[in-house]
Image (cartoon, rainbow, N blue to C red; front, side, top):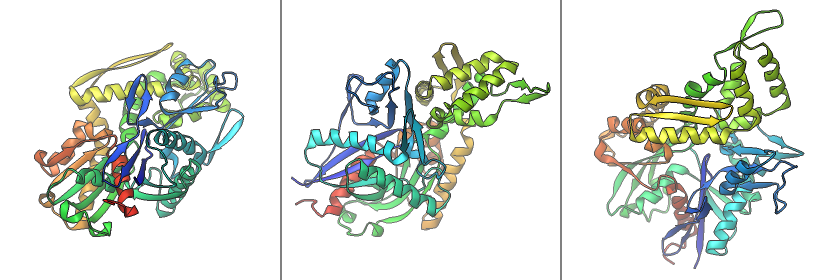
Length: 435
């Protein structure tokens, strides 16, 4: 039976799916902490040269990276959110211990692991794959940067084992997933919320549209903003964590003048995808000098500890659990306990919604722009399919409830709809649907 492969390489999670000629799509599964999951964390752990893996590996990916990182002694390097760097020309390569890695090399490690898992479960995959792409890449300033991002992503996927790479917009892929549930035609707004971007498509979907040879006949328009779950998470770091690590503190210069802490350090701290890159001899040396003159040296000790121990993943877990809790209740307690750093802060949903107000407004403006571009009134949209982890945030749902109506909102497959849809897109492009 012929197969078609779709890959959702995500900022936070990735997934790979295989569709067969009967129109069914199946997600590859992975072992994570004793359980099967259909998502693969987009993370890498590089072993310290003095703590090599028993199998001689220098790096492990996804679910394996987490326990390897926790158990390491001495600690190696933990890398996250690689996708968010694709559109940035400032990040070409990084040195991890005694070896230099391009961004494409890092992506290839994850793709290779995903491909191996799918091979083991489904057999030969062939050399072709359809891969999701955001409408607007995080960090991209224009079409040249978007092309640059696609070239790098394509190179990493080819290096990971797939020679023929085709791209599809992620919200269009989510639409292919949603369409399998329809027994009637609809005009649908797809809202796909990723870790680094939020993407939207307005499409005609349903039985009469499935046989359209050209997707352009179905897609009225696409739009996106470089805002995602990581941006929402960064507000927790800014308001709850950074102040406890000296963000608002001062230190004395050699002349005795009081100076504020360098805020660029805390901008990096807010993004755990960048936190690991603060661990340089220059940064640590600078902080040690500041610490000696700081008015709050214990807070600087805490910042040094977070950077030196590469605690981005622990920060991420603390933020993630707090954010999820606030989706179900009005208040929760943020906990980050990594001695000597211990942060315990109460936080309300109302406060969080104030922190992300600008992002919500930008998302709303993007939707308004898409509707205007397509000359479609909100009342003409039959349903809104929301997918991606950030779609769980109540304030995000409220943006759509206010523009449309609660009864038109749909959801499902929040972390895997794009991968499943990409496999279905690959099947349709191959011409083997129903053969």
